[in-house]
Image 1 (cartoon, rainbow, N blue to C red):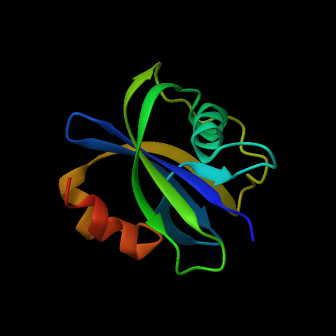
Image 2 (image 1 turned 180 degrees about the vertical axis):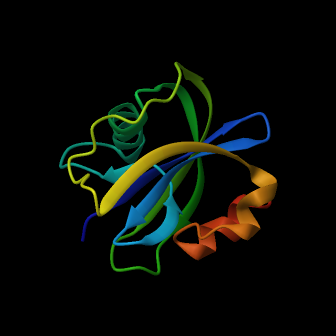
Image 3 (image 1 turned 60 degrees about the vertical axis):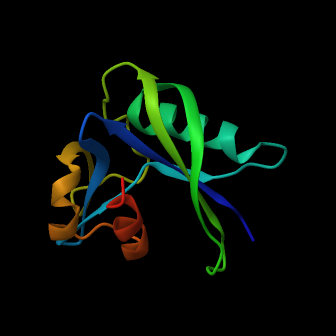
Length: 126
């Protein structure tokens, strides 16, 4: 079992998402990744956000935990950060598997395919 640490990055009334196009299927995910051995979920989130968006996180707050999956996911709310998001070189990027960063208004969450679906409903409460 490996815990996943995820960042919900908010600026004003917008959220930073990773827009995926995998084999023609368009969907969105939040930046994040696995917690390494000896690493706290908080530090994993800060590291993953830096790797995937180049943003430097100054402060984060635990927001939600999904425990009913095989691999638990811990979501952190991030509103204090430095920098402009830039899509770092995603290792798995290819013509049939693309990753792009996109700011979207929170009001649009209901009209996109944000995965996992449960987190879209939870974030809508912000």
